[in-house]
Length: 88
Image 1 (cartoon, rainbow, N blue to C red):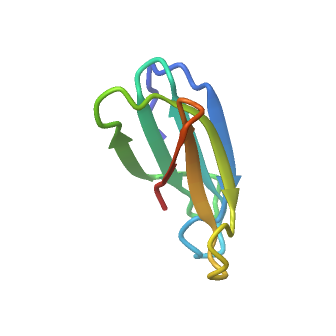
Image 2 (cartoon, helix red, strand yellow; image 1 turned 90 degrees about the vertical axis):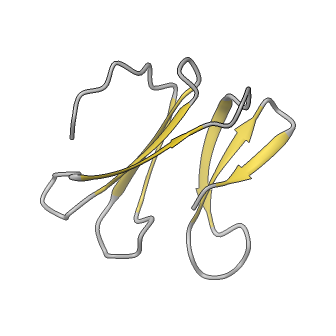
């Protein structure tokens, strides 16, 4: 994993891509970024999926669960205590 100067304000750990390996998700409210690092099962997270927020939608919280009952984990963000954004 590459080192980033972001201030990580929230994180989540789960198998987001359903490959049997844990992945890491981070948000930075300071830099308005979302990052997901996909794990390879060897303690390394070589693949990064980065998302810049549109406009002023600074994420405040991150959560993982099967919110739409499709038997797949969902990664959701709480944005400004009003809007929820589903990113995976």
